[in-house]
Image 1: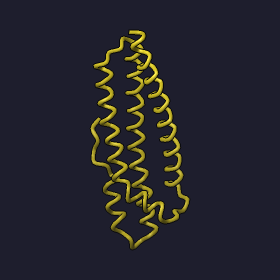
Image 2: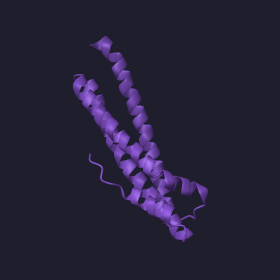
Image 3: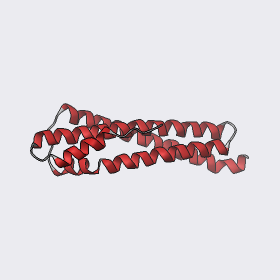
Image 4: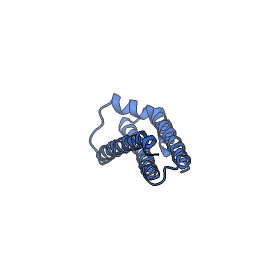
Length: 141
């Protein structure tokens, strides 16, 4: 998965520079956050799919080389998430520093964050399951 340069980073530079129009600035902040979190959600879904593939590897043949390759791919994706979070730092600070009115974008962002939290929780459970399979592996192999 190749990450293109996010629109969120461009939005954030504009947002932090434009203080003339608070309402437009708030909209830019919300759009930047929405774009960044959309990209994160897509990446986390991919990480979850890779985790499921790792589970299948552990259950069907225990190919540690393939498991390690999948792990490296997941680590690369998680570095991308960290980069996105870094790029969204200004927008997050701006969003927290001023009350933002309810808007369709804000509601969409809230729903997206709920889905993202659900995906991360599902990923945590899948990782725990894989850890259990790995712990049991030496006794079985």
